[in-house]
Image 1 (cartoon, one colour):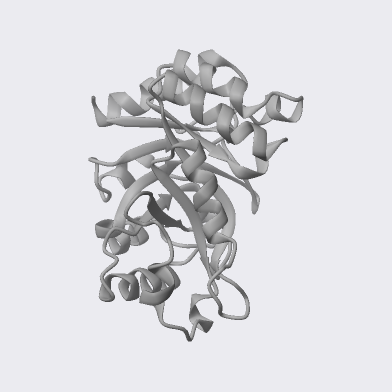
Image 2 (cartoon, rainbow, N blue to C red):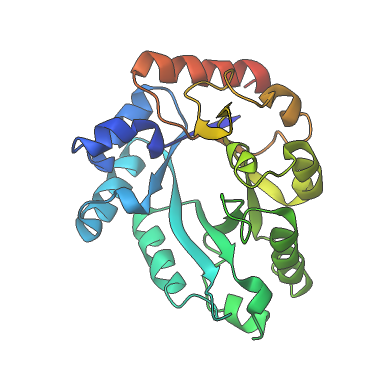
Length: 249
């Protein structure tokens, strides 16, 4: 299996000035196969993109790129920033790039033409269920993916984010079943519900989800990312081993 560490794991350190470049070595020491960098965590984007990419290559780490932006804007147009994000991804040497669908329901253009402008033969593009009704429910995700597949872009995939289903009140198992065939990347985190107040757990085994049961509804020959803040290296290592014990090597 392939285990990726999303840099949200190190949120506390990032807030105190740790750069994602520094996190590359830590991810390697923790025994992960790759790092998922978050665009919003870069302090000097132009400088750090190249540094992270070079260091990850030296350490033979996979690099994935989490971009907090949409494919389709509120006026129903393809996001003109996408090309720039892919260029950033090339500098990083990424395998996957992740967006949210956004307002695909308002899109009236020619999807094949718009997608042909992106280097989708070089970088795998995925959409994720976020914490909004617009981009975090099954129907808009399937609508976009089905249309993309119809026009020949079968290499576009889906990131199943377990914890986010709580925020959109989606059924995590039904959603896994509905999006199973498009899923090629899985973000794991659990969610705590404290009298209606939702928060992200720091342990897969603490929260409202039986993540082991949910994984029975998802493909296993994909990459898995841990994506929730943790305080210590020991805890991160324990959570990696917890996942590996369930999925196997």
